Image (cartoon, rainbow, N blue to C red; front, side):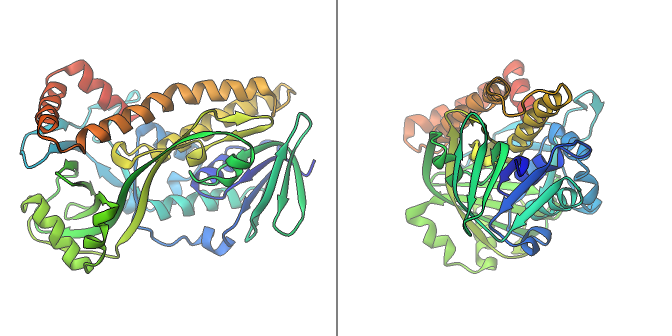
Length: 392
C-alpha cells in the first residue's frame, strides 16, 4: 500500500481530518487539485463561518484555533429571527454555560480563509501526511482488499481506506456509486461586509423578508457580514449593483436598524444547493465534510458538521489502529455512518423544511410564519432544543 488513508480534497474538512492523525503511525496522502500556494495562502471569499462550542473544542484539539489571530475570532453573543417587516423576533440569548463551562456567547464567527489556512498549516507540518497538490483524480475504485486512486497523470495510488472530502458536488462520491439527495433551492447567495453607524450588539439576525432573505453576521461592533439570498431569476438585480449600492440596498431592507451602511470589501456570490448522501460509506471508503452533507446556510451548521465528521471517523480509526484492527473494515465504517447520520439527517431535512416554510410568501403561510415565531419564543423546551443545536 502507498498509504494507509488517501484523502481526496484538501479543503478545511479534508485537512482537518488529516491533522487528526498527528502522532499516529498511519501514513496519510491528501490529493488536491489546487496548488499548494492556494492552500497555504487562501484568498478571502466573503464567507464567515459560524462555529459552535463543540467545533471550537475540536479546532483547539487540532491546533487550528491557536493559529487564528485572536482579533479575528468574533463573538456571536445572541441571535434573532425576523418574519417579513414585523419587528417581533424569535430571540436566542447568550447562554451562561455551554458544554460544561461558562460562556458569554452563543458561538464564534471566523472567516473561511482563516480556517482554511489554519487547517493547511497544521496538516502540512506533519511527517506522516503527504500533500499531493496541483493534480486531480481521474478515477477511483475500491474492493475488499484496497482502495485505488488513479491520478490525472496516470499514476495509481493504493490505500487501506479512501476518504472523500471534495465538496458537495463530489465526483469521487459519484464514481463510488454513493447516491445523494440534492436540493437546488433555485437561489443565489450574495455575501459582503458592511460598516455601519449603529452597533450590531454582536447579534446575528436572520430576516425572512418576502422574496429575499437577509442574514447579518456580527464581526466587530460596527462591522457586519451581510448574506442576501434571492431567486436566481432576480439575482441580476443585485449582482449589477456596486458594493456601496448593495450596502445601501441592505440598509433599506433593514429599515435603518444598523444606521447608515457602506461597503467594507468585495462582493461574492454562490449558488444555493443542499446535499445529503444516502450513506456515508462504501467498501473501504467514507465521506466527510460537504461530500457527506452540504447544508443550507440558514442554520450555520455546514463546517460544524464537517468537523464533527472528521472527529467521529478519526476516533474510530485510531481506536482500530491501537487494537491492530483493519481501519477500512465495514463494521467500522457502518458505525461511523450510524453516528453521523443520526445527527445530520434530521438536521438536514428539518432545515430544508424550515427554509421552505419561511420563504413561502402566500398570505396564509405569512400568518403561520408569525405564529410559529411566537410559539417557539413561548415554548421553553422547543427554544432550548434549538439553542442547543446552535451552540453545539
